[in-house]
Image 1 (spheres, rainbow over the protein chains, first blue to last red):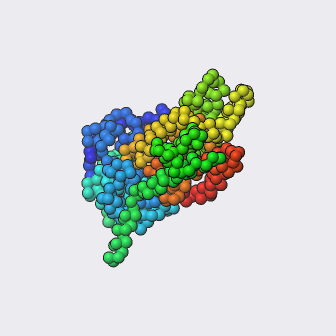
Image 2 (tube, rainbow over the protein chains, first blue to last red; image 1 turned 135 degrees about the horizontal axis):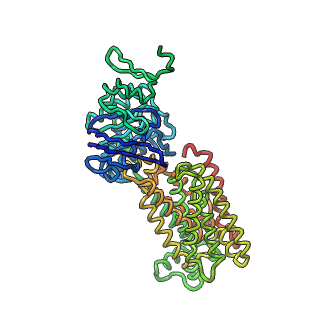
Image 3 (tube, one colour; image 1 turned 90 degrees about the vertical axis):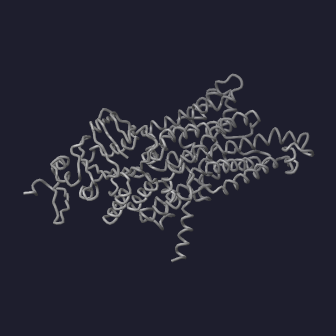
Length: 255
Length: 345
């Protein structure tokens, strides 16, 4: 799914949230939005979903996103609604409604749901209530719900923020597997080291603007990334050649 | 391994949340049964066989006074009880899922009190027959009350707790104005008062006809969108990604539920707790929170209120209890149980 954004602006109550963004997103690639809080990353994801009003042009396969109802885009929010009294499998099954129509799961869908539960390590928990899950289990359930949708494009808002290290890697590996099958992935991520490890491309945002945009390996060493975080990060390269981004405690510590 | 595999596939079947129609049929059968009981029992006892023959227009049915009791008194009353019960139970279930709060019901959001105020304004200023216009006035009153609750609570749908609190305040305010109007227009004090207590004694075919129009239309709308309503369990972005416009869906759901509540209130006065007791009972029995059960909730609500009305007519016979007393007697303790068990519901 090719996405092209041209002169995108978004203002809410006189406050500029997104400011003149133009870029293209190629299909089957993983793009990651990084930047400090309030940079407009989540809003940008909502625009790409088609649920936020914007000015300018955001086209997916040549059609403006808010008009393009045929495309199958999944969204994984940072803070989920946690409904009472619904089990993991029922929750994940909601993701099938776009394909099957609301309330008409086919038997193939039920098999697919079982597969997704297995893939996200939730199998065996399907009867558990959503409201009783831990933060990490809930995050995996959210991702399972999105995977059940069999989307062409998946938008994730901080998919790893609630997870321990082990589950972070597991979720990201899952997404990478999907990407290899041709799914386009756009995520926001606070952990820039992980972003550089998994994403093909990093888009650096600050105050609604795109400061830098390019291949992960280049962007991670760029001065714009430091600027976005007010020069409060250090980038080191491990012996294996892998970059690591660490927050700076204080200016004085650096010597 | 093989055994484990088989168990796995049994669990995969267990994944299916497809609505079980058995409960719906049981509720429909229950409604028929309590309906038959309700039109049979009373000061004059009518026999099942003769009732059925009369209703089917067969030879050997009731005649004379018995027939009048059946056709002009008990039948419209039982039908009205069923309609009002279905309306209150279904709108309760819908409010609960739209506001993501298991304790939301038509009364807590101020819809019923607002509807009561609208109807009181109509009765106290009426010249002639206003009964067929009562649902319109009730609807306007109910809608205004719900909208006021929204605006006072600040955010649309976002803060269920503050919404419920403002609903209670708006409801009390509407009730206060209603009482004031009632006292000022002492000539219409009696009809308003007896109507407020919640009663089905006034039921006649005219009231059944107009209330059935409004209630069946709104229930039809709610049941037709019931499957999409499950999408509101997700965040707005997620439901949007599944092809739902969440705000539009909520608007339609709240409007239809408010029309059903308003009609119920204008037909029978304020009958509390049906909207909480019935949806929770259905969810408890079926272990499902899905809105696909709205038809079942409607049937169960109808059966519940027909039964409550039977109790109201016969418990202190020949005197009659207000039906609201019966529903509160069952509902208030139930409400407290739900409140305590809320984490698991």
